[in-house]
Length: 417
Image (cartoon, rainbow, N blue to C red):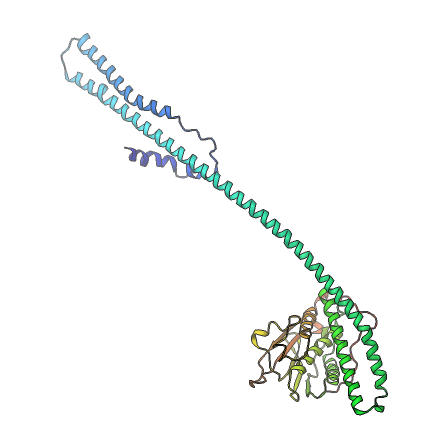
């Protein structure tokens, strides 16, 4: 009987088609004050379900007995038996079954209300626990963000101090170095009066002084570029004269290395900063010369490609391993160990990469180039916009911030093939 009640009454009551079910209501509404019938009502219904049918049966017997035997003085007839069966038996039994059904229904309702209340308490406890954990996690995240902000501010301060220190030291070094180079130039005017050994020593001192001057200038430029104070004056730059001038000045410092230059006659100008572009080319050339065996050729070329000017420097050196090709443009990174690597500071390619990207270009390395296992070579290629295709805001660049007395690009006559 209980299963029948649950399947035909309780389930439709809990889950009604087309309307929100009680389960759905419980999910959305917190039942903080459930109102189930009190347990006394259930006990009262149990008592009534027995007493009321018996009372009805007794009343039916009394009235039927009085009517047929006392008032009419009749014998037992089929009518008497039928009325007794209908009003004294069938009616009370129907009432008893109905009351028992209602009692079971009320008990099921109370059980469901108790289960819902327990579930609601469990959900409230779970929500409170999760809220507490979320609040703790939020506090931890806020503390971590504060710590990260403090660390970031400290790093910015250290970076600023580092840039200021590098700039100060470079300026302090450049002043005496300028005096030394000036004295060497004065002595070089009478170099013919010196013995051959002294002339060679004087030449080495002059070359090393120039190299040290370029290193100090590179460190200054890197410091300014990282600090955002190295701005550019962009404009049309003729590629062939710039490459010829840079190659000639580089070979003057690094003689004895065959170098070829290939530039198409109708190559359009690039949109770049001429002084910084020359610095990029010089860094790539010096890198190729340092890593190439003596006597091996170095090729410099330029061409227009996909709306850009592509300039490449090709050598016959040891090449760049694949695992190093993404690292060589990092500051102070050197390929190889300290015992086998060539002289240098790991700043040339880093500075070249920064300058090219600042001029809206890209730079990459390709290696190996040749099938020679001992000298696979490397090809450095960087691109710059063509002068007619520069961005709209390119003309708004500020002039380069330079101190009085800083170097300007060399004006040597082209002397390369």
